[in-house]
Image (cartoon, rainbow, N blue to C red):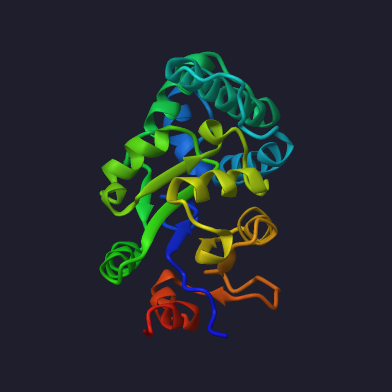
Length: 244
C-alpha cells in the first residue's frame, strides 16, 4: 500500500527558518553596554552560557489568560524573568528595567534576526508544489511581527505559538492544535525543526512525520536528518505524495 500523502508541512521558527544575528549574548550586550556592562568576549560568553542554562530551568511559556493584551503582558513578564535571571548570574546593573524594555522590543523586530539563505526559496517551492504550510513555535506573539518584517508571513496557512495553544513543544497538545487548524490527521503532516526533543520526539509522539535540521553536523540519530532546508523538496516522502 502506498504511503498516505503528505498534505502539509509544519516548521519550527527560530533555528529552523531564521536565527539570531550573532548570538543572544551579543544582542544583550548591544543594549546593556550603555548601562556599564563590560563589552568583552568574556561577558558575551557568560551571557550565552547563562541564557542557555536559564532557558532550561524556565517553565514552559503557557498562561491561563485569553485576552490578547493579558497574553502579551504574561509573555513580557516571562521574558523579564528570563533576562533578569541571566544578568543576576552574570552581574546585575542599575537601569535594568529600561534595558529590558529596549531589548524586548528589539527582538520583536527584524533587526536582530536573519533568515537562513535557503528559507525563502524552499518555502516558495513547497507552496508552488501545493503543500499547506504551518508554523509551530515556542516563540511568543512577537513572532507575527517578526515574520512580517522578515517577509515570510505570506507563506503560512497557520501559525501555532505556545502561549496561544496552551501548550509548548514537545507536548503533543501543541501539535494537535496545529493539526486542527488544517483539519488533517498526523500521518498527513511532516514537521521540520532543529531540536531533537522539542521538534522530533514531540512530533513523533503526536504521530507526525519528522525531519531534523542539523546544520552543525552534531546530531546522533537514525532518524531523518538534513543539513539544510534546501534538501526538503527532494525528500522521497514528499515525492511519493505528489507522484500521482
